[in-house]
Length: 221
Image 1 (tube, one colour):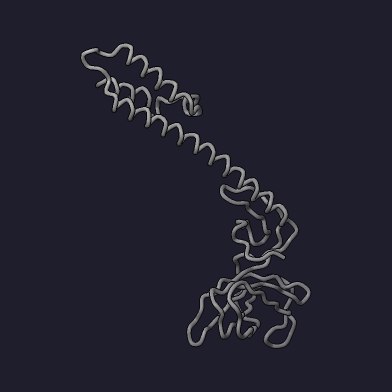
Image 2 (tube, helix red, strand yellow; image 1 turned 45 degrees about the vertical axis):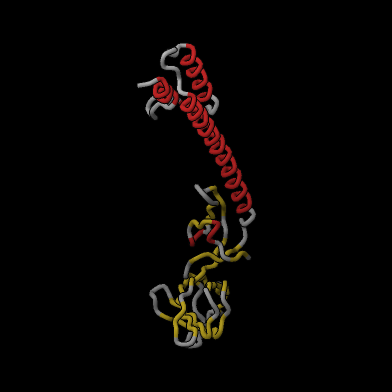
C-alpha cells in the first residue's frame, strides 16, 4: 500500500469505525487529511517522492466530500423549515370543512353534500345514493359537468318520494362523454378536527373520514 492509499484508508474509514463526532463535523475530515499529507511530505522517500497529480486529486476529492456534507446539512434545514411551515398552514384549517378522497356522505336535516373530480368535461353524470346495506335509495341526474372539482347536494328525498333518515350513506358516480365512460374520483366532505406533523406532510384528523394528508385536500369550505 503506497502513501496515498494509506491516506485514503485513514481519511475515509468504514461506517463501523466512524464516531459520532467525526460524522457530525464537516471540518474534521479535511483537518485529518492535511495533517496526514504534511506528515507524509515530511517523511517521504527522497528516491520515491509523492506524486503531485495524486496529491492534487486527493485534495479535490476531500473538497468535494466537504461540500457535499455542507449541502446535505443545508437541505435538511430547508426541509425541516418547509415541514414546519406546512404544519402551521394546515393548523388554519381546523374548524373548516374540506373535500377529500372518499365516497361517503352524511345526511343531516335533509341535506348531504359531497363531490367528485373529473379529468375532463362530460355530457352526462349521475350519482346513486346507497344506504348502509348498499341498496340504492335515490339517483341524481346532474347532466353535463365541467372538468375539475364539483359538488352536489342531496336533499334526502328517496326515489319513492319519502324522506330518508339522518345518518351515513355512500354514493357511486357514473359519467359519460358520448358513449365512453369517464373515470371519476369521488370526494367526501369532512370536518377538520386537528392537525399533526407527518413525515413529509401535515396530517389532518377528519373524524369518520380518518387521517388525511394535507396534499389530498381538493377544496376547503
